[in-house]
Amino acid sequence: MRILVVGAGAIGGYFGARLLEAGRDVTFLVRERRAERLRQCGLKVKSPEGDLAFACPPMVLAKDIDRPYDLILLSCKAYDLQGAIDSFAAAVGPDTAILPLLNGMGHLDALDARFNPANVLGGQCVIAATLDAEGEILHLNNLHAMTIGERAGARSTRIDEIAAQLGGAGFDLTVSEDILQSMWDKWVFLATLATGTCLMRAPIGDILAAPGGEALLFRLFDECCGIAGDNAHTPGEAVVTRARAFFSERGSLMTASMLRDLENGAPIEADHIVGDLLARRRTAIDGVSALAVAYAHLKAYEARRERSAASR
Image (tube, rainbow, N blue to C red; front, side, top):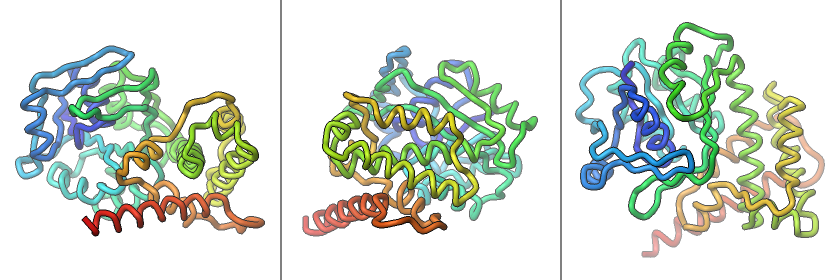
């Protein structure tokens, strides 16, 4: 199975490197700047689960794609989605499966609008990874899991064939027969973590140490769960129990990657992770929406960042 990994950043680079190490037929779709860096320094991963290094990983530029791939692994940031779609469009054939690992649901609408929806799978990943100043991938803890599935539910020959390629490659793989619910469950959790830690500029433990901090986190979580329920994807009891335990862990240093991006003055996925969630609300809530306040906070950051860039 020919696999095209779109990008060689923190997420795509990590999972692509694991697949490459396992002997899979992997090619990285990269821009010229990243390609030059990889030619000079190779693809390097530093991880508690074992370091990886490839002196010259297989890669291709968008202009050089000359035939379809069997599987496209897509893990770009939401604000880069349209550019990514344009870059890999030539690699999509009638039988190509597209596996997006983005957060939220908006990317499915964009992919369905450009390609045959039957080609687009559901997927999500759980990993903390980043690129350092040298372009090396840093895996920050022991979590490195991927969940995939057919959006229509149930198993299929196609998903089993893909699972056979992705499985046994040094990370945890799960095939879900209700992948949309899995994606909603992660969206609810991530939106709570992102809005809570960005709004308060602090990790979970510090928020809990502040007066009203726990109530704020639970208010955000309950609002997110309510929106999931509005869309027929209410998180199950086990998911809710785990999340509430996570958001009440005293001393936790956990933050969202969005907070790291915000503190570094980088672009953030405010619209895809929070704005789109708010747009899917169908039931009014009592009083002020904490989620809406957090979204306004993120959009104010984006406005300030854009203004600062324009004044340079």
